[in-house]
Amino acid sequence: MEDRALPDTETPTAYSIPMAVLAELTHRCPLQCPYCSNPVEMEQASRELSTAEWQRVMGELAALGVLQIHFSGGEPLVRKDLVDLVAHADGVGLYTNLITSAVMLTEARVAALAEAGLAHVQISVQGATAAVADRVGGFRDGHAKKVQAAEWVRAAGLALTLNAVMHRQNLHQLPEIVDMAVAMGAQRLEVAHVQYYGWALKNRAALMPSVAQLDEATRVVEQAQARLSGVLAIDYVIPDYYAVRPKTCMGGWGRQFFNISPSGKVLPCHAAETITGLRFDSVREAPLAEIWHRSEALNRYRGTAWMKEPCRSCAHAEEDFGGCRCQAFALAGDAAATDPACALSPLHAQVFALADTEAATGGDRFLYRNFSGGVPEA
Ligand code: SF4
Ligand code: FES
Image (cartoon, rainbow, N blue to C red; front, top):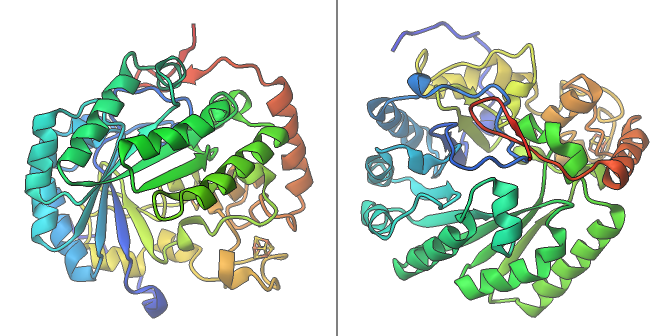
């Protein structure tokens, strides 16, 4: 490892034990989802951390006190060494979760991952039927593969969460998606409206739901939560543009979670590289603990001292930490601005009106995401 001196800032003791890390093993992925939140500029395979580098990093994670590792991407199953990585993570005492589209799973690979110590699988779904889901994912027969993979996961005794990314073009299938999660034996369903970062921003007009759709989705979720209590836990993330209060993004910048990008950069969230002007330190250059405590980019928006008005004097500052820095940068051009999802942001009304207009006039054609730079829907 090539050591690089980091600034000698004070250790933020209140944030000294990150709970979980999202290990983005690769940006490669067989699907082409228009809502992908990976950066527009993807990391090439040749820049990815090697097996040995990831194994060293996992030792550093455990020593730092991290409890959970979420293997993600892109599609983590693209990595041929995934079983070895899971085994190593389990060996150093990390709770392991695989976040996957599942289209590359086989029964043998599920068995090998379970044997290696994998505890939990999160499968993304794009709809309740092949017609809708395969169109959204830009991958033929993907939906049938996911249904089969979920069966293998449950048969192997692994915990299962379904992650349903919802938007204007699949919200009508939400009741069927809830039923599908129950039929698959999932313990948890995440109903997550698209967040508009990275590639998703290019498809915002084709994805933005209407206010009426959002109200109906909220009704469906609340009814299902009451009906399925004790059977299926349902998490619900509403679209930021229609929110009144912003989400506490990542539990606060550099507070509880962080990401490691395919090439080893330590990021406060998956979209942080969309903020220009920040330099993220790499596990190839410095020990992880040193980066967590002293990274200039992580310290930039930690806590509340960096805030401007109206956040600075707001009673909610310690609860939501001013919302999402990436969204503030995308919509206000300033990562230190109040997240426009907040009703107290001067941009809030404008953002709400933009969403309402795009939902009505945005058209339905997707721009699919892939390594060739994006393909317009035929
Ligand atoms: Fe949160 Fe800032 Fe809005 Fe207050 S003004 S609710 S701190 S985003
Ligand atoms: Fe980056 Fe919210 S996604 S801070």
